[in-house]
Every structure is written in C-alpha cells, then in structure tokens.
Amino acid sequence: MKRSFLLVLLVFFGGIIAVSAQKIVYSEPDRDDPRTLNFEVVGKISGKYLIYKNARDDHFFSVYDAEMKLSNKVKVDFLPDRARVLGTDFITYPDFTYFIYQYQLKNVYYIMAAKIGADGKKMGEAMQLDTTAGMGYTANNRIYTVVNSEDKQKMAAFKVSTRNEKEHVVTSCVFDKELKQLEKVRIAIAMPDRNDYLGEFGIDNDGNLICLRESSVATNESINKVSLVIKPLGSINPTISEIKVKAIFLDDTRIKIDNLNKKILITSFFSKQKRGNIDGLYYSLWDKQTNTETLNAVTVFSEEFRADVKGEGSLKTAFNDFYLKNLILRRDGGFMMIAESAYMSSRGNTFNRWDMMNRSPFFNPYLGSGLGFGLGGYYPYGSGLNAYPWGSPWGMNNMGPNSVTRYFSDNVAIISFEPNGKMEWSNIIRKTQYDDNTDNYIGYGIINSGDQIRFMFNIQDKRSNILTDQSLSPQGQIDRNPTIKNLERGYDFMPRHSKQTGSRQAIVPCMYRGYTCFAKIDY
Image (tube, rainbow, N blue to C red):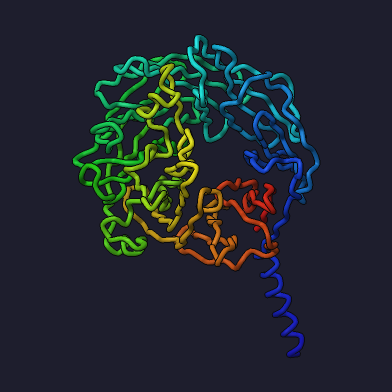
C-alpha cells in the first residue's frame, strides 16, 4: 500500500514536471551566412518559422520547420539592381507576411511591399505603395515610417516634411489587409512654437492616424507642452487637442491606443524642474468617442520604490536611467508600464539621458540637420517601444576606432495601474548586465501568455551568459523559474531580439562559434 501511494505521488509530481518543463531546439549555424549578418525574426507562418537575413546587398528568407531544421533558403531576387535597401518592415499574418522595403534610384525614393509565403517565396508581384520624386540628395536612411493597427486590418506608410518650420506636412497612405489603398492625403499640422515637433505615431483599428505634437523648452530639452493629433480616415482635417501638462516637464513620451475601450493612453516620465531628476510617471487618458480627456494624473515615486530600484546611486537619481520599454493594456481599461535601466560609457565617461543625442527611442527631428536626413525636409519616426536610448540611426555605437563603449542594462521596473489611474502595485526584476562594443546580449525579451508574462534575459556568470526567465503574475508576483533545460554550451542568446511565435513560444537568436543561429523555446 505504501509502494502504491509512493507510485501515485511519483506519477502526480512527474506529470507536473512534464507540464512545467521547457523544450528548446536549435538551428544549425548556416556556414554560408557571413559573420556580419543582419537579421529579423519574421514569425510563424503556416507552421514554419521565417527569418529575414541581410548582408550587404544580399537578402534572403530562411525557412525552418518545427525542429528548427532549415527547409528552404530563398534569395530575394526582385530588388532592383544597384539599389541599397534603406529600411524594412514586416506585417505578419498566419499564412503570409508583407515584406515592406524602401530604396532610392537616382532622384526617386520608393516604398514597396511584397507578399511572402510560408516557403519564403514571393506571392504575386511586388506593389508600389508610394514614391517621393525630386530627391536632390542621396538618402542614408528611410524616410517613410510604417505603422499597423492592432488587428492588422489597416496599415499606414507616411512621411513628414519639415521644410516649413511653421507647418509640418504629413503625407499618409492608408491600406487595408489586401493592400488596397483607402486614402492618400497630405495633412498640414501647425507648429506655432519654435521648438514644436511631432512625436510618436500610431493607427487605430478604424484607420485613424494618431500622433503627438510636442514642444520643448529648447532643442533637446524637456517637454513642457503636448497636443494630441487625430486625423480620421477619409478626412484631411486633423483635430488637435491640448493635453494638460501643469508645472512639470515630460520626457520619453509615449502613446498607446486602446481599441477595445476606444481610449488613447499618453504617458511619460516627468520631473518637477527642467533637466531635473525623474520624479515619477505622468499619464493622460483620452476618450475618442467624446473627444475629451477623462484622466490626467501623476504618480510620484515613493522613497521605498526608489530604494528598491536603485543601483549604486542615490535615491534622487534612482530613475534617471530608466526608459519606457512596454505598455500593456488590460481589458478593464487599466494598464501596465514596464521600464528598464539603460546607459552607456566610453573612455571613462558615463552618458545619461541628457547626454544622448537620441535620448528617446523615437527620432528627434532636430537631429536631422547635417546628418543626412534634414536636407530634403523629411525625417523618419520610430514606431515601437522596444528600443534603447543608444539606438541612434547614424551609428552611435561606434565611438571611435580605439575606444571601448560599454553598454549597461540593469533592473526592470513594473507598475500596474487601475482604470481610474490609481497605482495598483509595483515590482522589480533585478539584473545587472553589461557588454563591450555590443548591446545584443543585454536587455530582455517577453512572452505574454495572458495568465503571466515571462521575462527572458541573460545572467552573467564569470565570462558566460546563462539564459534565464522570471514570471510575472497579474497580481504582481514575480517567480524565478528554474534554469532552462537543454541549454547547450557555446550558445550566446540575444533575448531582446526574440519574437513571440505562440502563446508560450518564442524564437530567440543566438550566436554559436561566431555564426548566428536561432533557438525555439516552448514553455
């Protein structure tokens, strides 16, 4: 009887272990890939995993099966000769992806879209989305920004002209899922103050283009005015509504569209004085149906919270190196803010958010002049949160041939807010990461399975990186999970470049003996 009871216990707990275990499989390094490879995990398409690879003028789609065996490698042969691709975007669906690419030929700039199937091959002919003629210079980077709606039924490609300092002109092309053009409009947005510029853009499920107009005290300074710009689909007349910002200075401003509740969340770190220490979080909630602000509040970080997140600095400067990385909306209208500490040093000098030429992951238009962007009056915008302050478009990673740039990525702060704006709970994921001359192996990736959020990141043990993960519950509890099974030696993971491909699955790029490969992790 005791043996039977013991057997039942073993079966019971063995079942739990089987359910909670992770499975990891690796792709073989492709020896034909150069070591200076650029890549992007496109996603899971019809049971296959698609990876875009680029090295100089060569572009490929690599297709992997469920065991990460390479089943197809297709060269992108439809790009024009002698044209350098200046930007790529992907909008992925269950059975195909749109490969959106930009290039310049002579004095004409093009943005195109090609439909790519699960086999990595082009489906039909590539489509021209828009052009910009009369380019009197050679572009060094993209001039169009691509954003898509949450349900992926709408997509917009837009550019911004700044030739007139008093009025910036947005040229926007909106498409449906089949890339049928729904509109092409030129929108004039007044810039009444000298230091006005446009911030982050987004598009809602109805096809309405949304952005922020921000005003700073001076160039590369704190934000003291914010307006919400909404351009309805089918109209050329945007509504511009001022958002209340009283006696505080904003930094790192973000918007998040709540399609379910028809709201727009605007949030930012703030300080009580210009170029001051970060004091807390500012947030405003805008109702799209009534076109009114329903919430405007700030949360001042307590000394206890500051003591919890700070590294070696003082309590006053505890949040000065934090940047917003993720905004997650809840069905009830509440939201979660995730921020990470990130900074860099070179030649013994540590750079903070005010030293960064591009302190926000979104491009600052004032930096266009003289750097290859402002000459034609167009400049690009960021379209996502998952970026770092040093993600400069002109290669700030290279600080000189003989210097060493060290990148740091430390604690992650998580705050949950109720629908009325009251802070519900906060917590910290503790980590200390750094690397020299590359930021690929620091930071984190997330898997949102609904019932929990997993944070994947490397723990640095002597000279090795060990991939680990911690789980966050809806109530704010953080659990440290056991080390992932089947971690083979010699693989260095890049979790911040990972892509979630299932409710509990992600593709994580890694490096093995100098070659890029990919690991599929199932929880």
